[in-house]
Image (cartoon, rainbow, N blue to C red):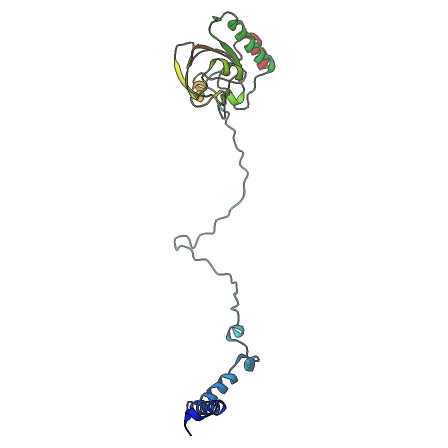
Length: 233
């Protein structure tokens, strides 16, 4: 009978028998059994080599430190704690305007400087607008930012950021960056403040003589007898 005339079941049985013969010839049944015998389930009782590793015990031992032969026969140095009194060196100020960082003008001294500024303001040319600014710590130290009266800025100063010029009583000019939206002096104001040793409580008149130029008059704390008495008390 030919292969073509065999039924499906006979062909299937024949293929199974042929495959089994091939497996026997290759010893596949024996290999599969050997793999089953060496599976992890058969060796659960055996512990892994890593678990059998013993931790090394570190022992501490005092040893003699080697010393140089030059000082080996000399006694070891003895250290003792001693108290040392720290000497506070007072800070020196080069002039009466070099105030310490914690200096604050008294209310009386601040008022006196402002009133003296008002006396000069009353006789200034009315065609040139002006205003008085009493200095505080943030104006003359730290951030060195000088905020200007908003109404004065809106009426008389430029609407855009730019450079303005401050002229002191000696005629020296100082360029200052003016920030229109923030209505204040920024870059350059620190240089002007340091150069003129402005301090807390000083009263400063800003007189606008040109669209971007101000004449500056400074009235210092401590310049009058009343200020000196209030600061010394």
